[in-house]
Image (tube, rainbow over all chains, first blue to last red; front, top):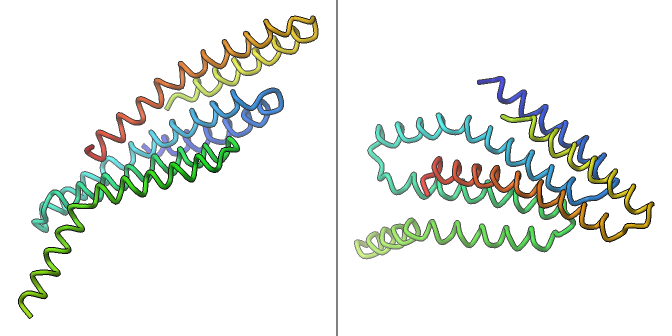
Length: 132
Length: 64
């Protein structure tokens, strides 16, 4: 399992060096190489994250928390991870505006995903205020 | 983790750039452009599968 980390680090370094070589001739293939290496490293990271998420699920069951709460958190993390990678690749390609737009889209998506949580918070505040 | 794919794409990039240089120097600019475009499409097709795999994995892991 630790092997995957070393492979990922080596792959990223090799891709960076090869990307520099390719960038001299044409930036398009170098950018695609970066995208590929990014995808592969993120896929490796997902392999490590899978047992951690299972552990979170066990914690949630032990603490008898609502499963929806963890689901919202997980979705927010997933959206943020993908948007961060895609945004940075856009910025690397010299299209920082597109990267920023993607980050705004991710923020909007995270807000939308966490809307039930905010509604629950509002209900709780209303209940507390009603009791006072 | 398939590091071979990184080498494969780098090799395609190098071959395409060499072909591009050769064709440009021999005055076949259109063919050089078409070769570059073909290489780009081939790499994109390889990449699309990996991106789809990553997105599926993220969807599955974070329960979308």
